[in-house]
Image 1 (cartoon, rainbow, N blue to C red):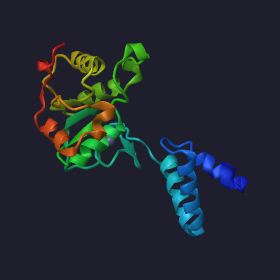
Image 2 (image 1 turned 180 degrees about the horizontal axis):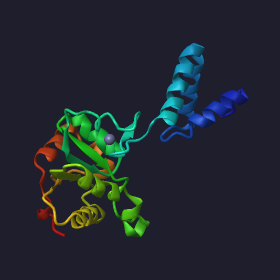
Image 3 (image 1 turned 180 degrees about the vertical axis):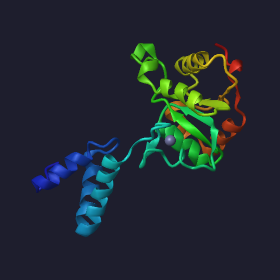
Amino acid sequence: MQLPSALLEQAVSEFSKLPGIGRKTALRLVLHLLKQDTEKVEQFTEAVIRMRKETHLCQRCFNIADQQLCSICSDMHRKQDLICVVENIRDVIAIENTQQFSGTYHVLGGVISPLDGVGPDQLQIDRLLRRTVEEPVAELIFALSPTIQGDTTIYYIQKKLQPTTIRFTTIARGIAFGGELEYADEMTLARSLQHRMPVEQLRM
Ligand SMILES: [Zn+2]
């Protein structure tokens, strides 16, 4: 696909680096922007640049945040002693969309997977353990992949915290979690949170 302008070509090439965007779609998006007022395009680019430069990870739970603490951690109406442990930020968004969870989160950044070179040190596990010392924690709800790696991670964290009065639960199985949590429909996800079960019932 030959384009009549080097600058147009450059923009198309940048857009087509985005996941799921081929050159044709990239061209359509770029031509759309070209039709807009300069001001509109500046708003668009500014939003992207500010998002990149000004967001960071919440100091407490590792969710995306604009301030030191994310909007969930700084919301005192939420149950601060109830922590849902997830793999990534997309899981937080999926669970938030159910509007059924009023606790806080802890984003691990993945699960323990020795074959992929992911050990406890590569994840935010130490920070979670520290939270249980620094904050009153009543329950940890694990919403991790129902895989050996997910179960290993639950087992590891639970062992590290013994002895403890913290309740350990896992959201009901039967739907895909982890990276696929975001694709689960909200009703199913909400139900699996309500019907969470004690971790001891997992076969480990
Ligand atoms: Zn947070």
